[in-house]
Length: 89
Image (cartoon, rainbow, N blue to C red):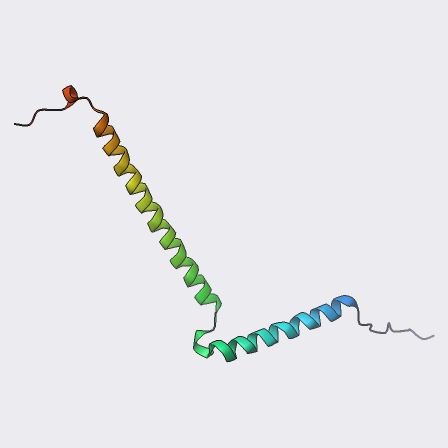
């Protein structure tokens, strides 16, 4: 009585995983060579760039809100009739 062990076969997924793994290694090595060790992108660097971009968008939104409020106030003031305005002095 012998138990037959299945023979390992190389499937399409094994090949594609191997190729993808090799491609990632090549890209990583190429990036290190071209960009340099100190300028390589990291998860921390990506996160910081995202935080900075969020802050910049928030600043732009606040500036736009301020401009819209200013324009609205100017239009409201311009629509007032002369009799609604208080005399000065």
